[in-house]
Length: 288
Ligand code: C2E
Ligand code: MG
Ligand code: MG
Ligand code: MG
Image (tube, rainbow, N blue to C red; front, top):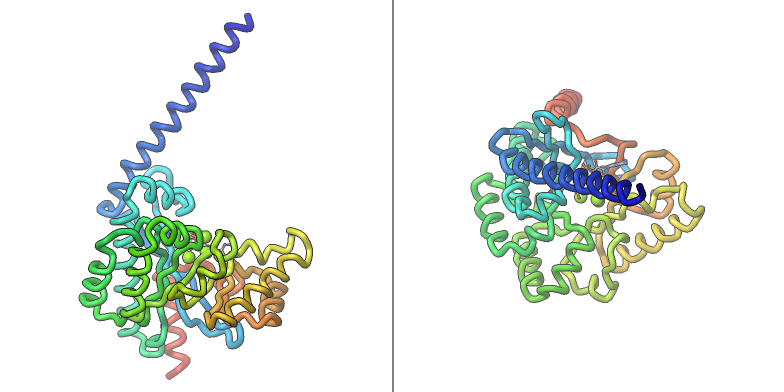
């Protein structure tokens, strides 16, 4: 009897494994076609000056509307894209869309001319030897200056690249810098970067990971961490953005600690293009 039970359990296990594998394969196939099927689009989340509340930049965030599964979170499909190499065309598409969008807005709404666009870059893209050439061609064809573009790379990805191929990684960072493209370290505080390394990297902005704003974890401890990241950024001459601000209480704490910029649901969720047009139209009218 026991024997039979084991067998049926392992059959069950195999079946569920198999299902997961084939689901993954299916998703991979679907993702391959997502661009040409026009299932991908970007949302844009405002980044604001904490002092004035003014929008200074947007972060472009990929969205995938799957024909049968509906909206799939980037937390699910980005890792899949990274593992399969699909992140190269996907990331290039997102970069291109975001740059074109910013250029359009700058043309249509003069009051937005100082805005910049932040785009996430995967570690796989950073180690793509064609990256710089692709960026050059893109900026040229869109007519956008490098200084209005920011690239976000997570702390873990950046360090991985720096350790595996420091020469190539440094070279790319240097080339980005020459084009006045700003480099942000995303999800800062969750990776394992050594502070001595940080000092030598040509980075411009740190984004504090939103987990440090969560007051449900040990009381007081997080605000100490935020405080030391604020000081670190000041010492290194970097701008600082706090991610995931949801409450007035968090905002007050960040202002007290003199964090400069913020992003989060308290200000705005990532917004679709249509909603943003309405917002910009209103702003433009009130300026006239
Ligand atoms: P991220 O770059 O750290 O982006 C910030 C994430 O936090 C976004 O999630 C955003 O919607 C979310 N967020 C912003 N404010 C709040 C808040 O107040 N509360 C909470 N709970 N969440 C907030 P999203 O859009 O789901 O993206 C998840 C991650 O997927 C991104 O994290 C980024 O790592 C990746 N991703 C998204 N688009 C791209 C892309 O075009 N390329 C690459 N390589 N990665 C991308
Ligand atoms: Mg980001
Ligand atoms: Mg982040
Ligand atoms: Mg993140």
